[in-house]
Image (cartoon, rainbow, N blue to C red; front, side, top):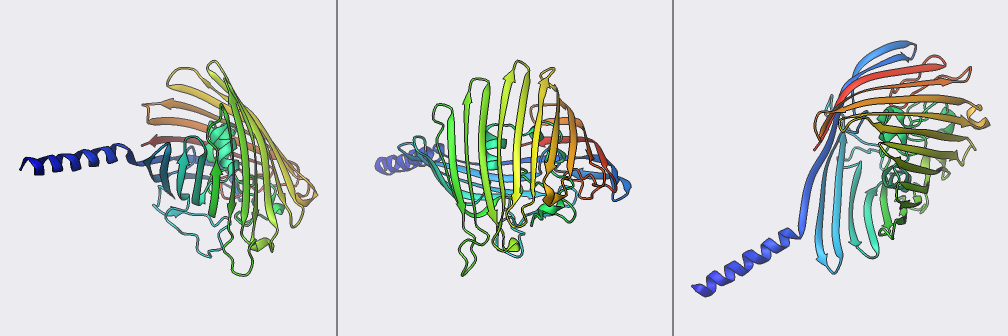
Length: 369
């Protein structure tokens, strides 16, 4: 009997150790509010909108310690519309004609070494997102305006396969909504502040190895209050007959007391028609109290002859008050003005203005879990 009890105790102990070295988490973001749009197709609009300050996400992540500094990890993330419960999905480089997967935001598994970095496979974010947004934190959309602060404007000549008509939605590929399917990614460990990586996405098209394929690279370095980095992503589309939308960018952030300053540059090129758009953005966030912060930034976007040499200025501002560590209320504004003859379109309004300017004002609440 004692032998049996000892055996049971040993099994229990082993199980406890296994669970102690493994973890599975459920996490998410929720955002909702009311937005006023000054001009959407010639008329003003007031609407309940969600996923603006933060994307609405529901995710599962897990990690298992395999010993010797090696671990297995996975992540599954679903993005949805809070007002309707509908799953948000984007095709990106996928050859699938029906991009409605429940985990289309991210779905991957990896092996990770504390010394050598990680190799992951699945549907993953490219390095425009990982490096410039995640690791460096150079994108003002992280602090002010959210979805409205990502790039759009009178640049429909870019002919982006994933954009709504008459827009250049998320033209520099940084919202995180355009993950790359069928991809293999290497990300280095943190080497005294230096991180780098590369990825390749298989197109999955029979008879044409490169169609719908993509490649991306990034590197960043952090030292004290300063972080900076650069990234490159090239996505080939069947819709462009094998040509690509090519993005590259560089950015930095600098912490200065209660303030954080950011600077970002991106370049977007359609290799089929030669249309190109540049964007430069500068701004920051200031923490007045532990609960109250204000963020603002300015961006200038300009294109070549492929987009009729159109340009646009945009200002974004956001005042946020934290009710707790998880939940905040906020007010934000975004204003865009273009050159004569071009219609303004702020990202996320999903409807260009009928004139040179467009304004959005919003109040909302967001929470994290």
